[in-house]
Image (cartoon, rainbow, N blue to C red; front, side, top):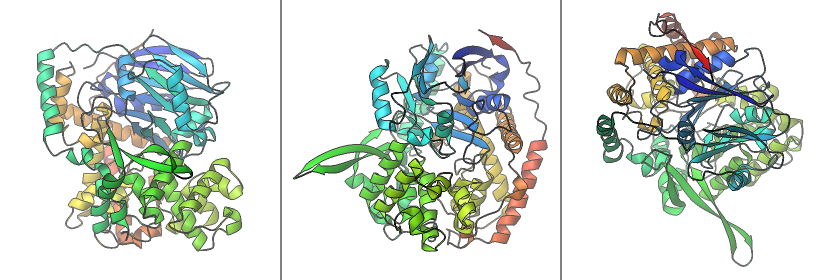
Length: 594
């Protein structure tokens, strides 16, 4: 077992730091295990998510960067969007930078006296003036920070856009241009602290003691990554390969989920993007796959043939959110909306789902042309650009209201029955069946990535209610284990328990299957406990009517069946949370301040 977890504590109020070597956190391995424990320790339950005293926690795992596809960093916080657990993951160079700066976790509290950004290295933490950066978009901010700070190739740069500065509750944090801490509003928490960004530059090293054994395990994992078909689709077309299969199975949310297939799916498929727009693939540090697909978007700015260009990353979720969900069937329109959303620092999925609700609410007369400032209809790229920009600037009461998210907007103006939100969180790009519906509703952060319910639907021949709930809970527990290591979930089939145990062993950490399962269950319990402390009431959950009106892979869903499944889930969840787990009671805590 790792001897201790090195935690960097940063107080923005007093511009002070402390380094804690936490032996008591060792059993949590790292990642989401360490992160949820540190969040619970530092969280003030009753305070607003944007109160300056609320923490931001970043955490990596013991295998970070030194094994293939172990590339992610988890961020934990109180979500401004839902008011409960905020959990988000990002890659690119961030995990590598934290690893070689020597920190397993970073906890940030307080609020700066003026806009600032942090420069973190293995030698120092600097609090730097960001007043000149405040108000800039994510691209310009990143360019200037790259010019100012050293460490090209080894550093990572996080930053927010104007949406984060304005504390819009679905603002994200841009990481190294092409990755994000998206969803649930981490960007707003940055903005509430007057924290424009963070640069992390590590130039340390990691000593591998059992080099021969390590190489054998590493080579075996590497071969599975690059020589099998487990991850081939992620390198090939990327997740946008899902557009056509989901469309063909009546599972692609379209026009605010009024439909589950899109007549222009061929035009916006992964195949179409690859043939006409793809010009570059990128990989996170420590990953040989290269799943980040970047499209070229030409923009004419003068006559006769004057063009500029932008590189815009795309994937299934983005194509769904500002493509099929908004009735946009052309690649140029989708890319232009992605670019606008990215520059402002918004979460693309939440923005797209919100715009879908706005469009239908306008069509139904719940909101007016005077409130919006123009008419809007599905497929209206120009109209959506107009709405996004006015929302960012809070142009009137309507725009101030919708800037708080789809759930809040539907409470104010009506239309909750067609608001595509689950647990106050905008849906992801799947409408596959009960597994997806329950999975996103009951998952710790109301995400399709919590438990893969959409995948369970696709493997299900007929509904077995108890098995479905057991599988959802079991999958969430196992993903907790993988997220302690903060592996990329695209590689989850490669990192089975035996592989994890062998990889940990060659870097000096002894775990067996029983202990890993105990860890996953403990984290499951902790997340439930944190959510309840923050006021989440599992017994008051309801489903918007729209989810039962539109065809899925298995036909239309039945609301009574969904409510029965909800009761089964709550019962099994409570049983799981009562189960006694021995792993952690045997560890004596020790905190050493350096």
